[in-house]
Structures are given as structure tokens and as C-alpha cells.
Image (cartoon, rainbow, N blue to C red; front, top):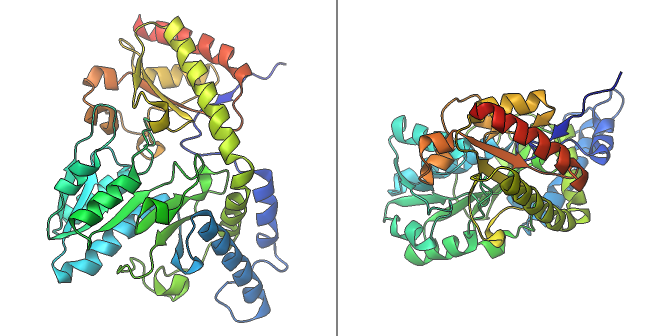
Length: 390
């Protein structure tokens, strides 16, 4: 019996764990030596502590940061929440109770900002975006007041692949008000381009392991030395008293290994996937005239692995289901919002009509995608779009 072909094109949601990462984690998942609590003073604990600290060193080096500036979390969502609420809570008593962010942010930022506004009484400005999904540095600077505490703008958009000029935004923010901190969610860009916190000029930065072929359930928050912020979790002295709770040592060690492997594939994959994405999009436009490409036109302002396309007259949710039945796994946007039947907030913020936003599908490529997959993908897509339009 022939096994049906399956094609995974949802790498922006998560990536499969690299076998070398899994091998690095295994000694810390057993019952002989590597299971100790990193906070324990005996050898079982100290051995694991050294491995965790080694992972911290690797991730710090990946970001051109100091190891003392890296705090492990459960992932990107916790890191984003910690960045926003940690800074806002720490700075309110000094009269800084205003947050500036963007309408197209990940829900980890948007929902946290809404909570801060509605439940904690903070002021939030949600900036609109340009038609291509980007935001102008001067628009960010114009939103800053003397009460602003933090600006949070993502580095790469998870749905449309737009790359934001964080370095220019950081400069504009500091020029307007040097006391305002800047945060960026770099979860999507860590696996697509080198990250340097000094070159970006940010004070806080979010990364996650499972977007770079590492394990789920672990991430990190970079916090520049000297930044004032409050912990959200209390009850232990872990992470230098900034994030209570026993560390997820196996996942952290896997994260370190995944980060260590980045230089061996990131740059070459970025080039390969950019070419592959363009070939895919061109093939779709030839086979399905009228297809709309969402996001920046300039290739230098797009993440190499993401293509977001709208198919007028089709229903996005129906397309996802029918493509899945054909063996093609894609998404309508962020996995954290995939249960929603509403059109993407990102596409609506771009000014797309609800029907066009509702017909959008995100295709995200990765190390397991090749040119040989395209004919199968094109055929399935043409059939499913045509059927959805009937």
C-alpha cells in the first residue's frame, strides 16, 4: 500500500527538532546522571547547571550579548509578556506608563498590551502600518510622549514576512526620548539572519527555540544591562531572581545546541529559500491569475521563508482543510491564532477587504522543502482553489 504524500509548509509555526539537538538533550532526560535540579549544590545539580550555563553562553554569543543579559523562559509568548509587563510595572512609579506598539504584532504582544491597558490601567498606542505591512521609524517616534516607557515592534512578521527596520526605529526612539526602552520580537528572524543586539540598538529582544529546529517550550529574553524590569513569576531565585521556577534543563540545552548549529545552515538556507519562494509564487501567479501577494514587494524587506497569498473568491479556512486532505500542511497565519475564524488582524491592518483577507493562506518553507515539491504543491493548490470557488 502506497503511503500518501505529505508536504509540511508551516515552518513559521514550528520546525521539526534537529536530530543533533535531540541527541544533545537525551542525557538530560534519563534516570542516571543528567536529571538533577540545576539549583542543587550536589554534583547531580551542578553538572546540569554547567550545561545550562553553556547554553546561555552560546545563545548570548548568537545575539552578540553578554551571558548575564540572557534569561530563559518557556518561549516567545512568555518572553514578550515579560518584556512588556516587566518594564511597564517597573517604570510606572517614575511616571512612565505608556506603551507604543504596532497593529500587526503577534498576539503575544497585542493581547498583553490589551491586558496592561484594560486591567492595569496603562496607556497604549497601537500604530497603523504602511500598505506593505511595515512601519516608518518617524511614525514610531511621533507616538512617543514624556510618559512613554517602552516601544515594542517585531523584527519579522510571522504572517506576511515583513522585516521591520529595527535599527532605524531604535535610533528614532532614542533621539526623541533617550529614556524609552525598545523591545523587538525576533522569533521569526533568528533562523533567517544574523542578530546583533548592539546593531539593532534594542534594550530587550525575544527569541524561541522551536523556530530554529530546537525543542518547544523554551525561549529566551535578552535584557540589556541596566534596564529596569520586574519579574512576573515569584517563588524562587532562578534566572538571577528574575524568573522563578525550576529550569527546563533538557529544552534549554537543546536550545543551546540549536543556536550553536545556526551558522552551519542559516545563511545558505536563507538564499535557497528565497529563490524557492519566488519560484513558487511565480508558478502560482501563472496558474492562478488574480492571486494577490500580501506584504512587501522588495525582497530585502521580506523574510526568505514566508509567502502570504490571497485567492479572491476562495475561502481561506476551506483551503486549509482541503489542502490538508491533499497532504499539504499550510496555515492562515500565526499558529497562536489558528483557531480563530476571523480574518487575520495583520491583513486587515494592511487595508485588505475582509473577503480578500479571509482568502489568504501562508506558505512557509524550511530545510525539508525542495524544488521537487513544487509540482505537487502547484497541482494541489490549483485543484483546491478551483473547488473552493465553485
